[in-house]
Amino acid sequence: MPRKVFLLILYVLVLGTLPFFNKEGYSSTEGNIRPLDSIEKDDRILILAPHPDDETIACAGVIQNAIAKGAQLKVVYLTNGDHNQLAFIVYEKRITLRKGEFIHMGRVRRKEAIAAMRLLGVNEKNLVFLGYPDFGTFSIFARYWKSEKPFKSMLTRISKVPYKENFSFGSAYKAENILKDIEAIISEYKPNKIFVSHPADTNVDHKAFYLFLQIALLNLQDKIPPVKVYPYLVHCVGWPLPRHYHPQLDLNPPKQFQNAQINWMRLELTPEQLDKKYRAILCYKSQTRSSAFYLLSFARKNELFGDYPAVELKKQVSLKEQAVSFFGFSDLYQDFEDSALANIDTQISGIKSGQVSYAVVDNSLFVRIEKTAEFNYRLVAQLYLFGYSSMTPFDKMPKIRILVKGKKIDVYNQNTKVNSKGASSETTPQVFILKIPLDLLGKPDMVLASIRSFRGKLPVDVTGFRKLLIK
Image (tube, rainbow, N blue to C red; front, side):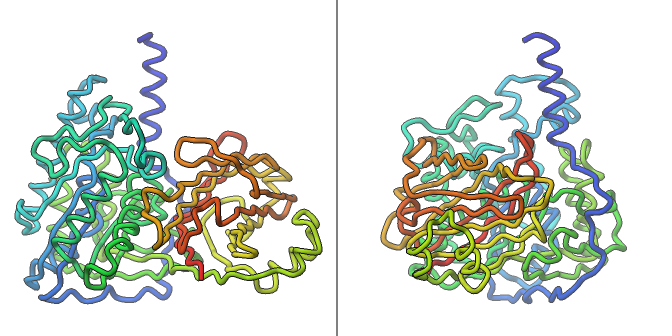
C-alpha cells in the first residue's frame, strides 16, 4: 500500500475515533429528571453492552446496587470491541492491519471486561460474550437478513464469530443469528429489567443493540414476563463536558436533548461506588491509554437513563387529499397542522426547532420535516424505516432505506433497490414531506424510524430511532 494512501486512511480512522469537543453541548440543569426505579432483591437484571467498557462507564452503579441487594445480574457483550484502531495503535505501540492482530485486541478487551466486572463483584459465569463484528452490527441489522453472503468485517476480513470462547462462536455475521442469540439468552434468563444502549447514540453498534432488543422483546412478549427497558447514552457530540475525572459533578442530559421528550432518570452513586467505578474504568487499559479523558468523564455523582416514548399513529382517511394532488400543498398542509401528525422533537441540526412529524393517512406513512434556511430548497436525507408486524416473521419484513435528494427518491430493501411506486416527496425552503405506502413497509404494526440529514455529501446529524405504533 502506498505510504500516502496509508497515512490518509490512518488520518481518517483517527479523526473518526476522537470524541468531538463542543463547549455548547452540555446542560447543567436537571429539569424533570426522576430517580431510577429502585433495584430490589428479586430483580433479574440484564445489562446489554455493545462493547467491553460500555457496561462500566454507563452502569457500574447499577451493577454495584444489584450486587449489594442480592439481585440476579447478567451482562451480555454484543461485540469484543476489536475495531478501535486508535486504541490499538496506542496500546500496542505499533501499526498493523493484519486481521489476527485485531482479533487479538478483541481477546484483550474480553479479559479487561472480566477484570472490571470482578472488581465490581460480578462473577465471570454471569458474563456472556457474543463476538459479532465491532462497527458492523448496524449494517447487519439493516442489510443482512437471510442474505446469501454474510457481512464481512472491514478490518478482520472475516464473516463469522472468530472467538472460540464466546457464546456465538462460528455464527455467520447475519442478522437472524444475532437476534436468535439475544432471544435465547432472554428466554432462558427471563430478566425483568434490561439496561441497553440508547437509540439516539451516535455509535452504530449502540443503535443496533437497541434495535435488536426491541425486535427480540416483541417476538417474546407472550413467552416471558413484562420487562422494563432502561437505555443509557454514551456517544453524543460534545458530551459529557468537561472531560476527565470530575467526581463532584452531575451527569446531566446533553443540551441538544433538553426538548427531545426523553423521560430521563438518574441513579445516585455513593462515594464508595464512584471510587469503584473509577477503578473499574481503569481496568480497560487498552482504551484508557488513548481515551481516559473521555471515559473517566462518566465517573460522576450519578448515572443517567431514559428512552423516547412510543408514538401512536391512528390511521386516518383524508377526504381533502382525494380532491387535491399530493403536490397541491395548501390543503394538505392544513391537514398536517390541524390534527393529522404526531409531532416529535428530535436533535437534528438544521431543522426548525428540531421538528419532525409523522402521520398515517390513506394507508401511507407521511414524514414532515420543518427546515431552516441553511438547507435552502433542496434537502438531502436518508431514512431508515424498519417495520414490525405480528403477522409476519421479522426476517421476512422489508428493511427499508430511503435516499432523498430533492425530488429524487431511491428506495432500498436491505441491499436491493426496489420499485418506489407510490412513494413521493415535496420540498420547499421551509418544509419537506415524504409519503411512503404502508405496503412498501410490509403493512407494519410498528415502525422503527430514524432520519439522517446531509449538507451535500457531508452528514449533518441523525435522529434517534423512534417507535411509531400504527393503530
